[in-house]
Length: 200
Length: 200
DNA sequence: TGCGGCATGTAAAGTGTTACATGATTTA
DNA sequence: TAAATCATGTAACACTTTACATGCCGCA
Image 1 (cartoon, rainbow over the protein chains, first blue to last red):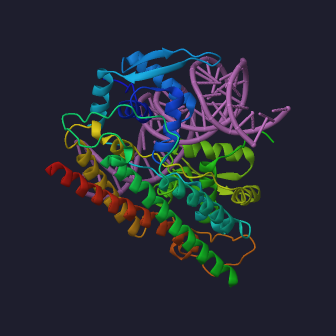
Image 2 (spheres, each protein chain N blue to C red; image 1 turned 135 degrees about the horizontal axis):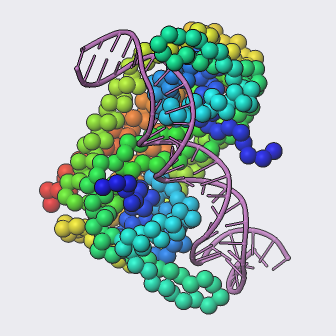
């Protein structure tokens, strides 16, 4: 076989359709922002593109919901071919995480920064990550209703309605929170070190 | 002003030249792999490209070292315009980190995976991250010699010769190790949860 | 009456990765 | 004698982001 016809973002969309049930591109964007933001982000343009691609592959089907005075909602649902693709993807080993963090890069070359620039950037990062941590801790709200319990392939699962009750969801949430906490601890520590250095 | 003429990878290269002294593209690639891998990675093609771009901007100068039976080494050094650019970059607030981790994405939709696929992926990740942690802990070796102590802009600094003695370097190293440890702890925990679930 | 939300998409540009190209020397 | 290291670069491709495009409704 040659080039893969899909990549992580494709499966992100597909997974949401499998988990949440039929959704529009707009809904999917909301879910990406609120549910997947910690592991994969997507612009709306990319989501619409993936939907188009997957429709071509037969992984999703589209149904048009007519609306007055607003563009029609196009609601996509996963097909059995889509489920098969999702399962097959799960069998492939994931690419290793590659961090790509501008703050760390700047910190690395902090000795070339104008006075206080590094600590200012650290302070700004603290604010941003504190905010994220808060967001992760708040139960996600204003999400499209999940009307279809996911179907575990072969393994029946007692949990069905709330995302908080899914072990995978729980594990990933825990990761996101752990990560933000670790990051924040480090940022506070870095700030201390920088302040102490300034005194000399 | 219009589009920025440089982006993080550009400053990664520039920072290394400022910190390490004159280097070839090949040297820079080694440094990216061994020193910057935790915060920003780069293919060699990208590095050669950035050098070309920065030469055009007057941020670096090139000197050719002739060699027999091998392509000449082109050794680049930072100019004062380059130093100014680096300093100015340090004054800009960094873009927020966006994680993009395929393992987390797969974990999120673990309920659609074939039996044991998730735990296998977790195990593979454990091996990879353990290895990284080891690498981070080993003092970096086989690096091009750093022949020029960096010049802190305005602030004299008692440390000069070894990278381990730079506070910024130390802080970033500590981050990298913290991060890998947090990730690993979580992976082990996830594995336990998954094993327990399997019993039911 | 201005802004945010709802709702869709296309086009272009910006970044990053992989493949192509070459070839001698050193090490196992 | 096969693989890794040294050493450079170009071209093509893959993925992501930003800008362009449109327009009503509800709220403050």
